[in-house]
Length: 364
Image (cartoon, rainbow, N blue to C red; front, side, top):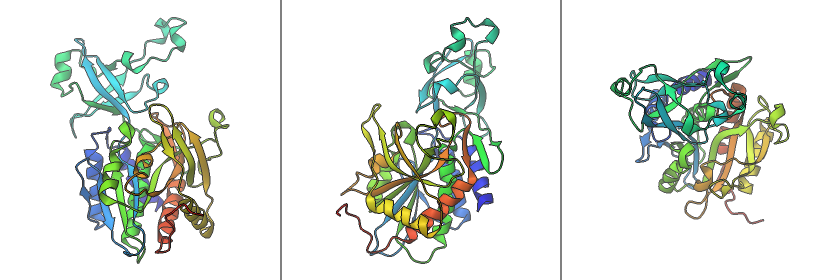
């Protein structure tokens, strides 16, 4: 399984897909489904959906992860060909300077560029310690004029993402841009293969969602159509095993999958997830059956699209599961493939434990 996860992850990381422009990623995922003999469809928002029918008396499940990545949109092309952008999603402005980027024109036509960084020898003492905000950065594609940039296909609104670069670290650790959430996509593909080969169990809808990094609501459209009883969301969980995050929790890279017991985001939207107790018990009990470590997270400042999916219809019994990741929202996000593999095994086993008697209410 690890070899297939690695291949899928690398191919997904090499495929650009800014929020609202996930078509290339969707095409790759659907090709993988086709190779596995799994039928899939795309809704009007762009979500990729595959359904695996099961026992009608059991609660239905939607398990999902997002396809999109954060980045920028071109807002202006200067006369000298330098490009100004607006950020899209929670781009870390501390991590922008001197990064290589890709301006997404179309397959085979994408334009490489770099986020400019003022020469160290020319910076003043005050500038040396200043983080340059997104409205002030410039991207250089080397063209030298507005006319040449436009002739290459770049225009206002062109998506821009960090240049795909895969860094293989020691063991099974992998770094690069868009690990969030192409690692989740690779894992969900593996889970879908397992669902296709299973015998019995509940009906499961596998969803690769759009626009999570933009407004967290792409998955909402799929949930409104599918009306699941249960929702399981896959995303990163902040690894806290480095000195800068040691006081934020106890989530270790390579320590196995995790579940979120509390997430909340108060900046711009009052929303989050307190998971359904039956779902917490399901994953805790399943991990114990597998003799698998299960890490726990409770974080402010974190938010996923499950925050909206949980509110569909009469309410959806929901939980966030995930893999530890370092350096979130940078060009060197890092995960451990062993965590992804364990998360796949846990998710498949947990879904298999959902039967007709699964408790959907919060009554004691």
